[in-house]
Image 1 (cartoon, rainbow, N blue to C red):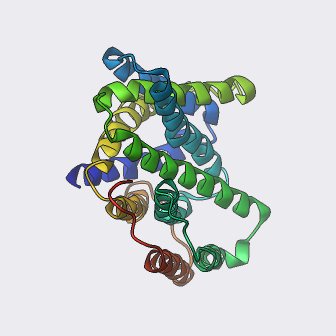
Image 2: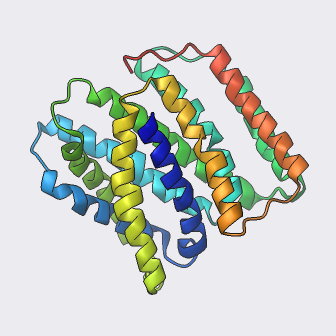
Image 3: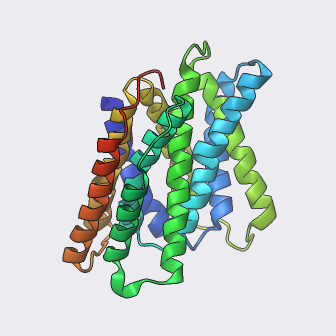
Amino acid sequence: MTLLWIITALWAVSFSLIGVYISGQVDDTIAVTTRMFLALLIFLPFWRPAPWRKSLRMMATGAVEIGLTYLFLYQSYHYLSVPELLLFTIFTPLYVSLFSDLLARRWPRQFWAPALLAVAGAAVIRWTDLSGDYWIGFAFIQAANACFAFGQVWYRQQSMGNPLPHRARFAWFFLGAFIIAGSAMLLTADWSKLPATPVQQGVLLWLGVVTSGLGYLGWSYGSTKVSAQQLAVMNNMLIPAGILVNVLFWGGHIEQWPRLLLGCACLAAALWLCRKRTPAPSRST
């Protein structure tokens, strides 16, 4: 659990780094592909061959948990502020519980009430400023949450009986992430938005080597040492940490605190309702 706390603090800083120095200045797909390439370079020396089915599963896990997650995440920065983006990651534990149940072949029930309550909480936060752009951003961050949650649960499941050490798995893991991000870059990149300044290049170097490479290795390894329920809880610890970092160090501003608190209450109630009515995931996930 200690390792998960360390990675949470690391990622809390990274959200603001992306919002301040990368989003809108460097093309999203170029930024994501650069991060995946740098992380892949770290683990290539540890690469080991594996049966083709296991190799494809590890690559697919990386493609979903990191590649697709980051592609959706970077898009959401165009529509949401950093505090809003962090706030809406509160749904990730719902997805962790959902996918844990589905992969354990337990059909989750009564998810409609929490989902509606969660959407209501999102509406309360910006009720006077709801727009198509706002909901597009909300949809992007939910897609990122779902991909990240599915990848975590799937990685935990694959870790059972896998003789490869984590550092060797992550060579395959980031290869899959690099392929999906690189494909998106080749198809859609705006090549006029390259990381041109030393600050942008330094931030991407940090995000690729430390946040993505070492951070995801630590998180994925830590996720295998805790229960699925503990993992779901830790996914939400990033929210207060990230908002605090953004407000204290990057001048983030929260308007309408009462509305924000009411929206948070609705989101928290959705999370509590889902956990109350959903059987606790077993350790076999």
